[in-house]
Image 1: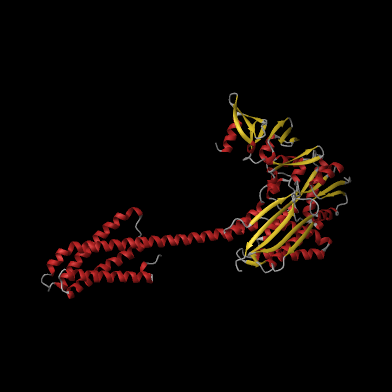
Image 2 (image 1 turned 120 degrees about the horizontal axis):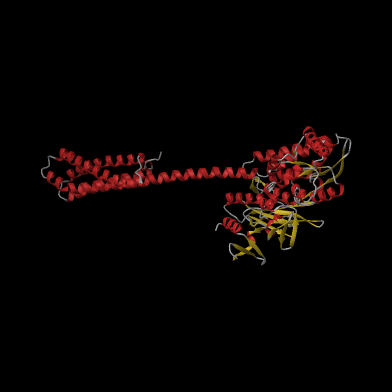
Length: 347
Length: 250
């Protein structure tokens, strides 16, 4: 439920101040028209309290009953009726209190149209302010809901993006373990360990978590070691990290799809030895990671854009930094290079 | 039956081959004539040894298992071994060729082997494999490229490089900037496997690559002619014109 404008301290002060001005003004006007000060004050206080009650009523009603866009005429009619009733009540009560002052009755009757006008205008203003206020409140709630929904969708999307390449890798690794159990039980055991550590790493990390480069590289090493076991001596890795880059931060699991992509085109789609290079360095406030792999320009797969792995990285970088220029790819002869920049949020 | 069965194992992972070898060692009537790392080696080995049975992985470098089979004139009995390929699994389910999902155990392996033995004894060749290969798109890679044999060389044509395809008796002729290539496939098969947003059967005897078209002119009554970027003209039938308009959203 939306809150009333009066629940906000600032608005309460403004509202009270307005009412005070109204009372003082009312009193002064009557005084200038020749009514003694005491009577003017009584008239003003009674009139304005009687006006305050329906105004509060309106404010509260609109909170529960928001007029539709085409119902503004009803509101207008209500205001007129309420203003008439209030004026009549005003007349009755004032007469009761100030009947002793002889010329008051004449003044009261002559001023009735003006009183009505002022009451109606004040009510109109209050109504308008209330409608605007509650509209704005509703808008705010809608926005909050939308942001929440977007956040959820984003999380789901990230989760889905992460799941894409796993099953193929997992089943093939299990198959390799199956083969090793008979011939090389010790290696089989080691591979089970590596695979478990790798999978645990995938599961426990949250997408919005930042990890150090060192941690992420250790994790990638697990993955590369498993691939090395699967493909025998075909895979060679060349990892070079500049000093002082180990502590730099990056979003968890961001490098993995890039390396997976390099493996996919470099190892799965070429024949013979494959060298995958990973270089890390620091450029100003950015961590730069370069991954390169050989590929075959003749098999069409590499020609088809960046492939799935990289479009998901691109999307994630956009969701995280709202920038599209952090991921660059280039192909030179038979080498495909992916260059990733990660701005360091904590300097 | 005591004849020796000649087997070739084609898989790009050495460990995956070794598990097949291990399972095969339990059977005395098997002779492994060669192990291959990829489809190219596979084709050569099959031509050289004329095996009775091959164990074939699907995801392999350069050309996948299906594409390799397309290039073999008379495929022997085949047992597919694959880890996870939803396209392949779909295709398998519709056909009776046996396949092993990695990782598999000895028992399941023996069952597949027995199935193939029965087929070999019946001497029916391997009609199921042929069915499998002539069915629609099998893996996403196949809608993006066509593999052809050019003499003894294997050529991989990315689909965007194709100008158009012409029917020629039992073959199709694929026209590219580098010349034309023959492939023993039907027009219907190619129409089904290639991306329908890019390739349209514009005529009974022609499939055209829409991205290559610069202009379509009327030609005689009821028919049109498409002019490609390379200047080549391809006939378009009335029916084909309708289809092209549909895809192009005209």
